[in-house]
Amino acid sequence: ARTQGAKSPAPTPPHGRHHPSLGPTTPPLLARAICLTNESEPQLLDLLAEYTDQLQPIGPVERDLVEAIVVAKWQEHRIWTIQTATLDLRMEGDAPEIDKTFQTIDPPTRLAIAFGREADKSGSLALLLRYANSHRRAYEKSLALLLNLQESSVAHASRLAGEQSEPHSAQRG
Image (cartoon, rainbow, N blue to C red; front, side):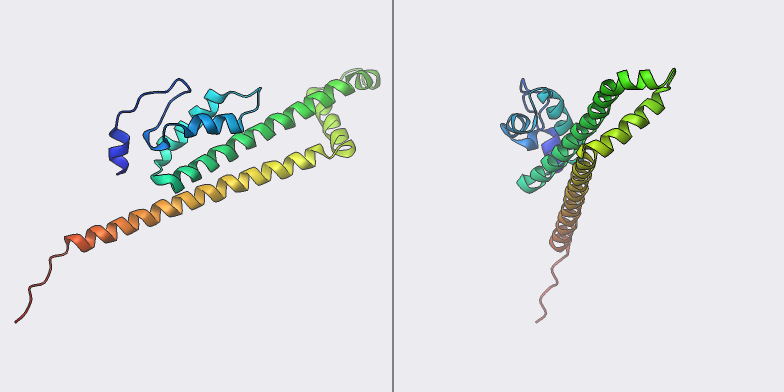
């Protein structure tokens, strides 16, 4: 079934690449639900297509797990972006005071000061760390569930194939 799905031709929608097992409307709806106005829906759809191509989901449960994996990864990247922006803002805001205090300062020291102040004055870095860890756990759990489900499906299919290929013993009379 996985190879048949990979061979089936499907038109490429204007929203990005499409994988036949995703269904016609899921990716655009997912992108609209997940992407912020300053994020790229086509990039999310590309990420979804890449994961779908690699993980080859069959059926709605596997597709849901691939979507959960992609959403967790997307949100983890968003948190990384927020962490960077938070520290950049702190460094920029602290620049006048830092420039008065130090004749010269290297970028790592400027970052260390910004990090310390942000950690002391705001709970945002700790909150961002909790969110990043939460997204990482969601990613890992969804991936483990998917791989476990796929392994179980393969084992089940192998057992079924083995039962069908066994010759039926002749009836003794």
